[in-house]
Length: 259
Image (cartoon, rainbow, N blue to C red; front, side, top):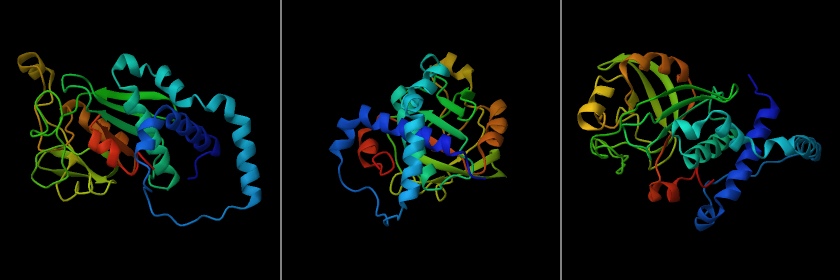
């Protein structure tokens, strides 16, 4: 079903604000991100869109900041930078028609250690955090902190970037969710690497108490056993997952971030 125009304008203007805030980073990478075909837009459409932008402009420019503040994401630990990049990339992908369900976005903030609850599942329509919990990173990505990332098979490292959730299945880890990596050369081997969301007994607070961090996966964003199924059922079927790190290589080379 087509989403209200209001929402799309809301996110678009939030993107403008984010672009202004991050102009130094974006201007350093000025190569064209995508080969795109020109789109023909009628004068009527331009006038209509312009009128909508003008009418909503005053309230919408601060949308990203308002969402971040209203959900107390700072207090919950989500980096403002991670949130800004997530909304910017999400908005770009929504405009390309990428997601079947663009009400939900999930953000994994790997700038936090695994002893922190660094998965945030957000309902954008309700402006509400649905889940905030622990999530594992790959065993070769680091111990408490994920600092090394790879798209290579058998690397046992996590991959950053934007993903689309696919269908569920029952496998070696029980109820699981397939992922499609949307960034070529960064995470597009997710399917061949069997990078999925699944439950794991090593994603548990008892390990934080004993060793300072939760267990690690072979690259999958593994979740606590009790929360895995409800989270999967919430985000399955074409929603956005963004895995963030302040890793300079990713931020400089992501075509979605720099679109």
